[in-house]
Length: 484
Length: 98
Image 1: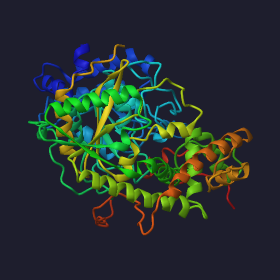
Image 2 (image 1 turned 180 degrees about the vertical axis):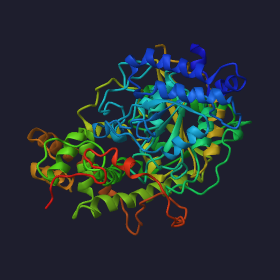
Image 3 (image 1 turned 30 degrees about the vertical axis):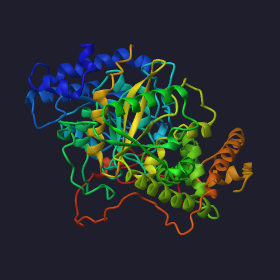
Image 4 (image 1 turned 90 degrees about the vertical axis):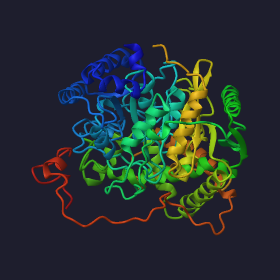
């Protein structure tokens, strides 16, 4: 059964369709795996055994349906995405008892496609963090070395996929939160173009940056899940009316011959650890041997991206998180004397330190006297950064670069230095500023820990990214599975 | 904020007040140091020439179209009140305001 739990959705789906495996059997196996591994990993905040088995039984009763691309496939969902009737905390004490009255658009789509939802994945509180250590409940651990972080903020999603607890997970990516944990845990993660996937029912952090996307064990599996969750939704005005191609279908024949990979020089310089740099160089060499071309490109304002990103993300966070007032839902303090103290005490006790830090800085950069110097300026630099991406992508097919400057680091390493932690996001966050799609995939290991690289394309170039991603996957050796 | 970004306890208290948050005396000093570091780092933007650059607030490039304005039952009264810390059958309950 171990092998089955590390197989792809495609392989499991074939067995399910042929009735060689029932949805109930597969769900039970995943639940057993969860029970065995959770004490070490902490990937999940809620395990819905009863609900998952009921969903699986309902599917088995009706029988396999080839028009449901996730029929009987067990998945997890990041706890920032609303699931009707199943507690959704966003990793925060603020929402410890919040039971959503509706499903997010992407969860509706998962259910329609026949997926079985096993539980909710651990995350940094309100998606603010790069290690999952900011979860108000417990840290998640990297399955390749449980003394190390899995990345974040969708760390629980990456861990649950990489450890064989489930076949895919939905995460969210505001500044790298899908791609970076995918890279540190050795799985495939995709951040779609801003607007490709509806954000309806996704607890907001940075609304002009947030996007839902899949984490899975292969590029084809990512394509399959993306086909399910992509599409226009009237309830999210920023979701795109562009038609959704069949991403899985588009992967039937792929090649690296003549593919022009743009290598932004700013992503390969100072700050990139030697062992990661070596794996990246080896990968580029293999792609060239397989017929690809390398093109040197430049993104000159990369050095300003971290500051730009954090100003915008914090400003949007301070505005979005104003809704937690202790009145309509969420935590309410018992130490209250009047309405003002209800707001202040509930928010102070309900939010963790990183969330309060970002709200305060966000309120500051939006405040009178500082708005132009910080927020407006950042929005102007954002346009420069976006235009540079577009210009670089005019010189090549896709950009290719590292995801994280280092491999997974020890738990607690940067816990008291928020600025140092922000600097770790250098290679991922400019993509969100530009609203472009990115696909992170494992390319090798350094000292036993996975190394990921990402390919970046023009807006709505998901098909191209997945095709090239699949071609890369086919020329690189598989990194294997973590031993737990 | 210039080369030497200084954030005093008073600034931290002002930021907390804007955010409807309380900061304990111990946290005041931790936050003051961290905010000075973070805002100091952000001064990097001062070197960027943004003359005549339009701000980009959203990457969306499709035209927003409003949906038909039709009345629909979305969620019931009970569902909406179910997550309230304090409510009766009809209303959210808060401390006395007037």
